[in-house]
Length: 113
Image: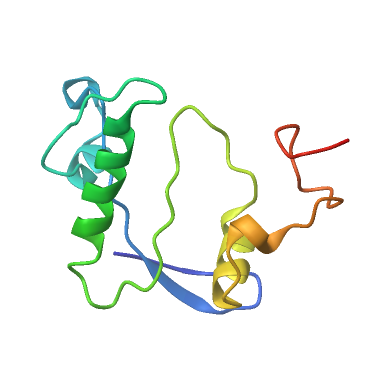
């Protein structure tokens, strides 16, 4: 478990769970220590991505102190800082509804006319 303080000195505990398509290619000992037991070897836009996400969530939720699960992917860059992520999660807002259509934080994938 990693403990960090965000910009308003709120202490937040978090843990990481990693699913790797090719776990044998992971050279970082820290990342290897966070790997879940099984690799689903998903392709892009494959149902095995969902299976991997569910397996990570299931492992995370075995710890009763975990209250939020955030999924990230190696092929995408973060949309906000960890500090902003913590702020959003502390206020009970989903990233799906955290930003309005006209927010500067929206991406080119958002619906625009």
